[in-house]
Length: 164
Ligand SMILES: [Zn+2]
Image 1 (cartoon, rainbow, N blue to C red):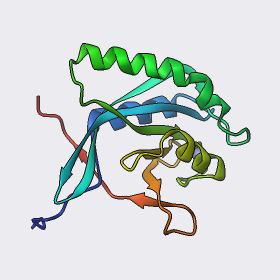
Image 2 (cartoon, protein in one colour):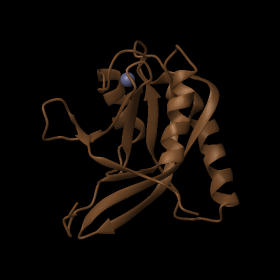
Image 3 (spheres, rainbow, N blue to C red):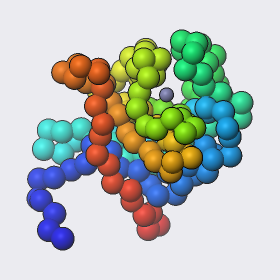
Image 4 (cartoon, protein in one colour):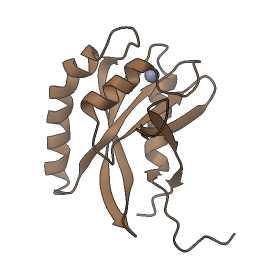
């Protein structure tokens, strides 16, 4: 396969990380959520991200019915966890790349609540939403898009095997 020289995916994620998240989602019939941690880089003027690991707090249940209160309620704890990892890994470039949540047998899209969550908590240019449907074995990355009627767009991605 010939790869276009100027091509870069907006999102890269380690296989281990996506498998870990899928497994967590499979283990719960409820909608659960966590954060995505990684780094951003620029290539030919375009920002792309590498998602290295996920953060998950037991009991982080997400609901599409009630606004963004669940995210707000755990934001402090997730921040603390993130700061600990940043320190441990001695990597000042680590960022919160976005969040993930499960859609048990709902398919992959952003609901109006999801869109509000994205706008409210993860509105930076590089921040993404990862939605996983463990029943249909599907997952998809999204980001905000003001040019789209829906307000968001789907992102292409590549899954990387970690060699180290
Ligand atoms: Zn959702």
